[in-house]
Every structure is written in C-alpha cells, then in structure tokens.
Image: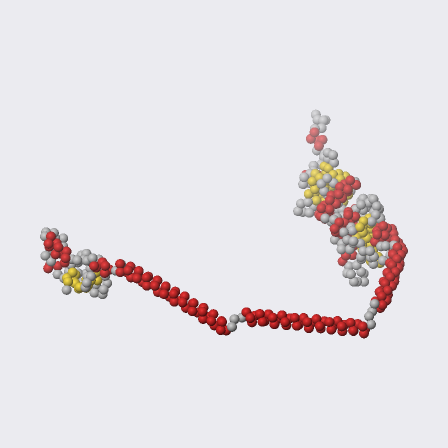
Length: 490
C-alpha cells in the first residue's frame, strides 16, 4: 500500500538549487532593476577617502543606516563633497556588494536637503576665510573716481546687464566689457573666478584695455541659486584681484561671501552702476562750478599783481639817484676799510715792539748760557767726586771680603793645599795614584813630593799601633795633610 502523504523531502525537491554566487547575482539583478534610480535623504556619517580615491560614507536615519559610495570617476561630477553631519539628498542606484552580502547606494549626485545645512556649511567656510584675513579692511582697494573702463562679470542674457548698461548711459560715459558667465548651476563658480582672473591678466596698453573697475552682478534668487558666489574659488579670485571689485549679487537682503571680500558691496546691480560712476549732470555742474571758481581766482590774482606792480613803480628810484647812492656807499666803505687797515697795522706794530722789548740781547743770552754751563760743570764735578769716593769704598769693602775669604788665611793656620802637576787641587786620596808627583803649597812656600815612594822605608805599617808619643809626634809632623797617602818631600 503506497503512502499517500508526501514527505517534506518531496515538497522541496521541485525547487531549484542555487549556488551562493548564482543567488547573489540574482539578488543583485533584482535590486538594481527595481531601484535603478533612487533619491535618498539622510545624514552623512563617517565619510572616508582611502588611497583608491573612492568616497565611502553612511546615510543614516533615526534607527537605520545605508552604506553609500562615490566612485573616483564620479567625484568631479558631484557638487557637494560629503562631510560629517550633513543633511543631504543622494541620487544614485541601489546595488549589492556580494563580498559582504550587503547592499549599498552608488551615489552620482549629492544635494543639500534643506537651507539649514547650506547655512551651516556657509558659516563654516566664512569663519575659515575670515581667520585667514581675506575679509580684513586693510585689504580693501579704493574705487577710482572716474573709471574709463568697467568690466562686468554676469550673464549676457539676463536683465542685470541691461540695467547696468542703461544706468551707465545716464551717468558718466565709460567703456564696458562684459565677461559672459553662467550665474548659477554646476561649474558656474569656476567660470566666474576665471573671468575675474582674466580681467586682471589683461595688459594695460592693448586693444582691449584692462578695466579700472570690476562689477560682479546677478539678480535675486534662493540660497541655492546664489550658491556659486559662496564658493571658495570665487572668493579667492576676488581677494587676489588687483582691480577694485564691486559685488552686486541678489537683492539688498541677500548676502554672499564675495560681499565680505569685495572692496564695495552694492545692494543691487543698478546701485553698483551708480557707485561706479558719477552722474553726468552732477559732474558737469561740478566742472562748471570749478571753472567759475578758477576764473574768479585768476581775476583776483591778476588784479592783485597789477596793484602790486603799480605800487612798485611808484616806489622806484631814478637810476641816476641809485648810482649816486651806491657811489656814496662805496666811498663810505672805502673810508671804513682804510681806517680798519690802519688800525690793524698799528696794532701789529705795537705787538711787534712789545715782542722785541721782551726778547733778550745776544750778550745776555751768552752770559746766561755761560752761567748755566758753569753751574752744570760744578754739579758734574761734585757728582764725579761723589761717585769715585763711593766706588773706592766699595772696592775696599770687596777687598776686605776677598781677603777674609782667601785660602791664604787657611794656610796660615797650618793647612796645606795639595795639587797635581797641572795645578789641579786634589781633594780626596783616590784622586791621586801611588807614586804620583804632587805640589804642597804652604803658607810661606811651595814644595814638591811623591805619594808612597817606597812604603818599606816606613818603620810602621798602616794600622800598626804607635807606642811612643814622640814617635806619634814625628809621624804627625811627617803627615801635615789629611791625605791617606804618604808623600815624599823633595
């Protein structure tokens, strides 16, 4: 009997069996076809840019997180680079990452989700640029009073350029060069910055002269529409401009970052044209007023000079009178000079006489010299006598000392000086050999002797005891010196 109830194995046997890769690819195709283009709003968290150049971040909501990635090739097309905490809307397609069995959003565009996020990013950029000093007042350039050429950076098709040209035509006439640029949308900031830089790079003497003033203008709009004027590249281009810049972006209530860095901010583009040039009628009236003032000043100056000339003519002296006056002055001066010269000559003669009177005669000088020579001679003789006497006393004293220390004094006491044949003193017995001839110098005479001529002639040997005192005396008399040898006298 067959089993009518199907087993659990039979129920699943008809379902296909997928490999892990096949299932992953099937899920990938399903998700990508269902979510080929999606827009997701969320807060950016943990943005990271590894060495590959891709940007990885997470879009999070209250309790849910979605992985997102911006490929390296898409970075240049993304208007807003992800930063921590941004509230954004990401446009892209949903796909899976089979390596970790998760899905992620491939982002092709990022937009700010609300004005609050834009204002937050704007304030952060403003603070950073202000810390660099780009908004400092000392960097501002004074506007020229009468510019001859004005460069306008704006859209060539909008109403802004027509308003500016119309207002300039009513005022002081100038040449206007327009740099046509887009004033909103992707890439507008690069073209605006390039136009400002290009105006600065124009040569001063060329067919297209360099402007004396630049106006950056745009009509009003939302914050997103004016955002290109908040980009850092535009702000730095205005800051680096050597030509004064007037910012006229939006209405009076609109504020962008180039308003802080520009040299003058105009509330509207029309007001920028009014600030850049004076009113033609006012300028003509001012010129007429200055012309009238110059004419009146010239008339007064000419009238004053005419009166001075007439007064000078009246006070002029006749030439003959002038000559006579000068001749009289010359005579007076000559008289003063003669008197002055006579006084000088008289004073010099008086001084010369006084000098001659004080000078001694040659006889007096010779007598004085002779007196001084005699006195010097007497002093010299006295000094010589004194020196001779002192020298004699010194010689006498040294003679006494020499006599006191002379060896003759020692010889008087009974000592004998023993020398060899060459006259060298013999101080020790070992300095003279046996049988050597020596000289014995007594106080009264010098005798010659020989050391140890024949030791057998002596009755006693060295070291033998002498019994008789008379013999001791005779031996002692025969040995007057303290030498160890026994000399033989000749």
